[in-house]
Each structure stands twice: as structure tokens, then as C-alpha cells.
Amino acid sequence: MIRKILLSALVGLASIGMGQVDPDRTVATINGTPIKGAEYYRRMEFLPGVGKLMGKSFAEFPPGFLTLDRLFTEKLVTQLAKARGVYPSDLEVAAELKARIQDDPNLLTNWKASGQTEAELNEQIRYELSQFKLATFGVTITDQEVTKFYNEHPTMYTTPKQVKLRVVVVDDPNEKKAVEGELSAGKPFADVAKAHSIDVGRERGGEFGTVPVTVFSDQMSKAIGETKIGQTTPWLQTKSGESTNYVKFLIEDVIPEKLSPLNDHLKRAIRRQLLTDKGKAKNNLEQEMVEMRKKAKIEISDPAFADVYKKYSDEYLKEKGG
Image (cartoon, one colour):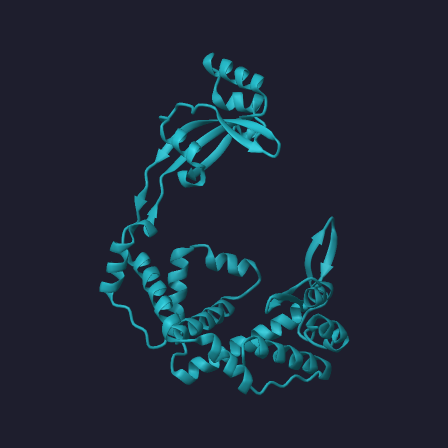
């Protein structure tokens, strides 16, 4: 039903969103053909096949509509944060940005490369902090609780043992014999893999990468664990549809499991997780947002678009029990 409502109102939506877009700006080119701003933003606003789940069904909504709905949500969140006295200050936003850059040194560079400004990133962080502070309103976590949780859940902060591997995969027993013969003759494993393997990594000499042992089946994990660095595993069988493949690994390196130290970075992550978990039991931000939606005075200038939003809002509130 919602999809039909939206499709009938697309003409009414056409007057929204293009006022501040430079229609002549070249967004990208393909084989020398430019894609201009007018085409790009227009297509992005009404791109088909995009939508969201409403209850148990998927409803198609143009991206322009979803963007406006997202903006409503963001404004309501920040309004509620101000009303509660937890609206993030500039200092809090700056501290959060600094912490995120420590986690990802390329964060700001990649953000700006996408065409967005640092000011826009700060506002995104302010919104996310508003959400977090509302969801954890009235909840505190002590340093002792952080340490206690870390000590009681070491496996959560332990990197499992990893192995650096090369692999050769064949689907013919005769190829197994050929591989064994060449390895016994001293031919490098990488050259053997290039000559015989059917795996996608054959051109890279059978490179499999460095992976946790937990990604393998019990049979493979046991075989890899019993094989020393520089040696190869016995042949292992795997099924690929109706056929049987034969797999042999070369163990290039073993990286033991490692418990991450309880440094400031990890303390911050644990504290935020504990705050979030306790906040879920104490607060119901989703229901508060439903109530905010019900009380909000939303005015949309285009009549057709306003009618679409009214019907969408009714479905949303019905789904949320509002």
C-alpha cells in the first residue's frame, strides 16, 4: 500500500531538492562522458528499488523521501537532547572526533575526499553523541566496573591464533600425485600452486593470506595445528557441489593468540558498551522518538508530498504502537 502511495505522488515530489545544486557540475565521467550534477542528484533523489522495512514487508521509497525522514529524526533527537540538558558541547564533539581519529587516522582525509566538510562531520558526531547520551541517560559506569568486565571476559578481547598460508587445490587424484612429486623434488610450493591449483589464488602462488584458525572446519584446523612452520599439511578433502576437491596447505607463519591490553582505547570501548547495555534496560529511546513524532509539528510545503508523509507517518506510528 505504501509503495502505491509513493508512486502516485512522485510528480508532487519533483519540486523538492534541486534548488541549491549546481546542475552543471561534473560529478563523474565514464569513457569521457560526463555525468552532470542535475542528472546525478535527480537520479539519486528518485532512484527506484530503495526503501525500508515497515513491519515485516519492504516498502519502496525514493531516496529523497528517506533523506527527509532521516532529517526529521535527527532534528527530533537533537531537540530532545537539548530538552534533557545533554546536548553535546563543542568540546565534547572535538574530543569525540579526536578519539575517532585515533581509531582511524584516515577518517578525516576520507571524509573530506567524499566531498563533505569537517563542519559536517562535527554535526554528524554531535547527532550520534546526542543519541548515545539519550540512550544512556542516568547511567554511570565506574573504572572498577570496566576492569572487572575485562577480567571476567578475556576471550572477548583476545585475538585468536592466526596462520599465514599458501594453498594448492586440485579436483583430480592424478593431480595430487603430480603435486606430491614436484614438492618432493624440491620445487617451490608457490610454483607448484601456479602450475596445478584450481584455487583463485593460483596466480599469486597459492597465497591464502593470514587468517584466524577459527575460520576452518575442525578437520582442517586440527591438521593445520599439527603442522610446523615451513611444512605442508596432509591432503584434506572438501566438497564443491557434486565434486570432491583435495586441499594442501603450506604453513608459512603462526601468530599466537594475544590478549589486548586494557589501555585507554579499550577502556573507552568497554565503558561505552556497558553504558549502552545498561541504557537499554533503563531507557527506551525508540518509544520516546515515537512520542516525539506524534507531537511534532511538521510542515511540508508541497501538498502531494505532505499527503505522502502523513500516510507514511500513520503507518510508522501504527507499526510502533503509537
